[in-house]
Image 1 (cartoon, rainbow, N blue to C red):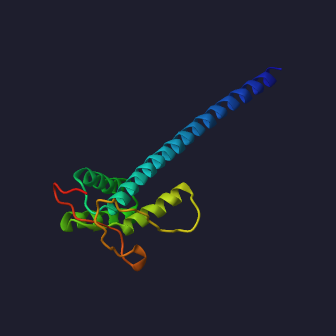
Image 2 (image 1 turned 90 degrees about the horizontal axis):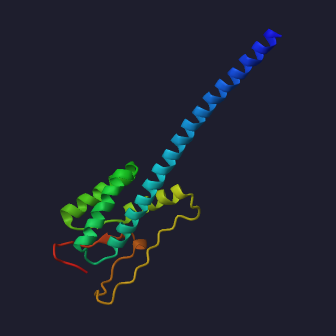
Image 3 (image 1 turned 90 degrees about the vertical axis):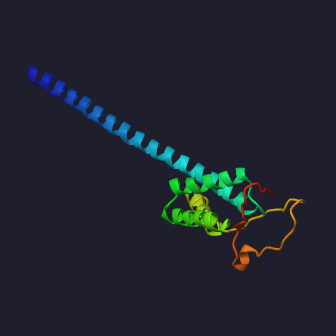
Amino acid sequence: MLVAAETILLSLASAIAGGLVVAFANHLMTRKRELEAKQREIALSRLVEAWLALDAASEKPGIRDGDLAKLEEAIRTIVLFGEDQEIDIAIRVGQSMASEQKAQFTDLLVALRKRIRASMGIRGKDRHYWFAVKPPSTPATPEPSPAQGEGREGVSHKKGEGV
């Protein structure tokens, strides 16, 4: 009888210890998964904000100081959260803005759009279409369409100039 009780207690202790190890391991793995999901969520939301800022800046005939700050923040965000290709394009855009006071945004917008859609699991044709209506106070100047091989370009920024 003593051997049977000892066997039962040993089995019970073994089951409890094993259950605790499994519960602890499960907790660690779940915590890690949740942390990674939160990091992806933050990065994705920041990249969406960057995409929107770049898209808005690329449609304006001039960039105000406040808009320039948003554009600079968008480039910094992409450098922080972007993948290698996006970072390389963002650096080229930033350098072009610094040296020429204008930049080509199309490649960066397209790369970010692909990444955002893939991260969100959005399926469908990979279409690139931008719609913008010029404000009435802006003189209408013909611009080449992106379909003709030209891209969206932010126009020069000079301190004190606005839209």
